Image: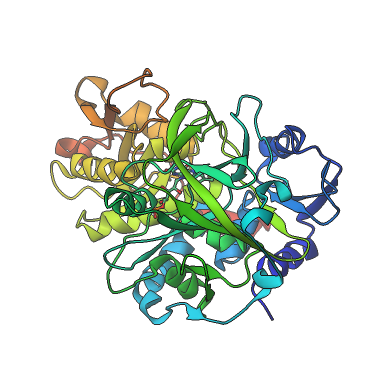
Length: 480
Ligand SMILES: Cc1cc2nc3c(=O)[nH]c(=O)nc-3n(C[C@H](O)[C@H](O)[C@H](O)COP(=O)(O)O)c2cc1C
């Protein structure tokens, strides 16, 4: 039984989580219909757009696919019905295993696969054969790559990378890409360009949601695991990913992708990219000259499905998955670098990793500030992150914003609890940086919302029923 996007769609259809939407126009209607479900993000179904205006039946676009927690759980193999905290606990148990076993799951190269059903090359290439939407009203054009994975290779080490960096469609054979400075895709392209070489790029535009999810996560590279993202997907699934060694670029592409386009990014060739509605909720990075990719070949399945995940003002169609996966990943890293007694970490929904909450069991003076600075460093490694980091005690549920606000307003003393870090790393899509700007940096705040360490044992007792009383009363009244 294949474990591809179509098998995944059958599973969500069986539980009533897939809705087919007919007749939308790729020009704003598809994006707007997608956005109309965002206020009901915990429960709304995935949307499969078909009979899109100007396109043959079957040329489909799938959106909101990993929006609801139930579908995120299905995708990474968690039980249904858990709370946010429960999902975090369940993932925490699994993530160490995935990291330690990924070495056992190098991708397997196969000769062919469903993605080879149609192959078009050279002058027959037309990226507009697929209904790339203009998602938001002030986007600078049609964005074909939003729920995708950009595949590149390090020129020196041969490591393969999967990254989710937006892709604008310019004309039949040219697309533009925005990979922020320092990201793996950017680093890979830089190496080729610095040596005057065109960089080979493959872009998978429709696939099982895991390819999108893992491309959007910052996983550590290692020379041992040459295709670390493919391997991580293999570890999650418990079986290796099948890839085809693509003929034009030599890059490994997923054998069961819906659509893969491949080509070259020539050195020094750029074009205006953007603006684009971004995950901060603004069009903040504007219109900028960025590298282009000249597409040489497109592979696609019959009746192809483009996976679309436009960012926006949160909540939107993928913020929950990012919140959950990044929270678990950062919490794991926080422990790995040696911060003791971390009890939870949650990147709150508004937006992405700009609002980080951590809970610890305080062990010594300065422990809270140490955890805050380490969390800030980790959250900002992707460029923009950690604008506010709040550290609190272990009795606070970091996934619960009411609990956080309770701790913030009762355990912090603004005069001594807030530290401002100035001139810290940021990125061009940071809305608070006025453009044009020569550099992208700004300030962050870390807030100690733990009981004051020096007198924490005298701090007023927090109101709560003991677990024994709760259990007894629940049993008595038949409550869950
Ligand atoms: C839907 C979505 C869109 C994204 N778009 C971009 C983008 O346009 N540019 C970018 O640099 N990062 C973008 N990101 C974040 C990167 O995917 C993320 O930082 C990832 O870790 C990059 O892979 P890398 O760590 O291998 O560089 C996006 C993430 C998501 C979930």
